[in-house]
Image 1 (spheres, rainbow, N blue to C red):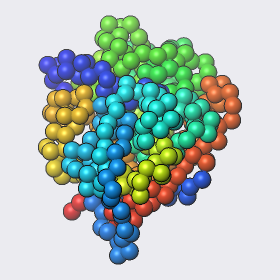
Image 2: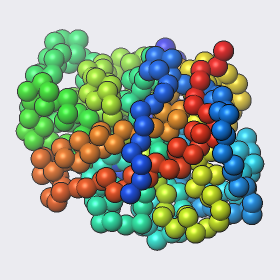
Image 3: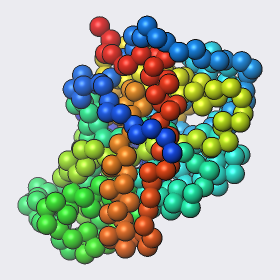
Image 4: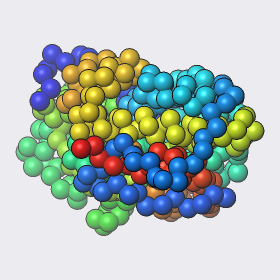
Length: 376
């Protein structure tokens, strides 16, 4: 349980709650080799480990947010993984992933990210110079990573039985961070449709996570979609109750994905492969720390240094943001979200994402590092 004395620090983490603020020809991604329950490890290099060119040193500009979803980036930077592969990485921190789109499209950023959102889908559909290359955040696969965001109901309405079941939501407003066309909108809509509810009968107004938290405290709103750390804070203090987590709504959700500017190929030898090797090393360190406790204190110190959540103790009390340790994407999830947005009238044109996927960088990195294996 999170002590009430920590709530001020939690509420101060406004930027931490921008995870979905956009919310948002290569080989087809393979299925992850990491077991769902065992998830998350340092790989064992195969006998046919490929050669990785690490010279000359290349300067790389990378878009990031000060959130734990970018943990792999910050760990790779702090532990020197980028330097080891000959990359001089400079982070450009933005408020949300949509803000990165113009810069990465023009090559001002060479690595960025986007979300399963209408804004990102529309940008990709314009056949801009972008490639989807790896997972950055997806639905949790373990008990420690499941439930980092959820539909929440104000606690008094839950306790008195006013809103206890999905059908009870009819007539209420679904407050969420990015309004219609966000990743949260997609996840909740998939869930509603399975239950016989029509997402188009709901209003989906935008309200930042801290404002949702405060509004529920003041009995100003009834239902919202909340995320960590305020999700755990609200449970601890009786502000709200969880109705459905991300995994309940869409267990295969692809929330965020890593993108390359296509011109990265011309910046030097194997620059895309170099970045992916360092990125996956950081991702595996992150998962090992929070799933298995390996070097957890050191990893928490890195995250407290780079992200807006500065209280190290809170990292041990909240659900961590999951990403696949082999970088495997779920293209079908993104394609299903794009189709859903069109059905709901959020997107007006057909979205073709297939040509945007390029799996060669991820495949190289996994061959170089070895498939992820949980630490012993």
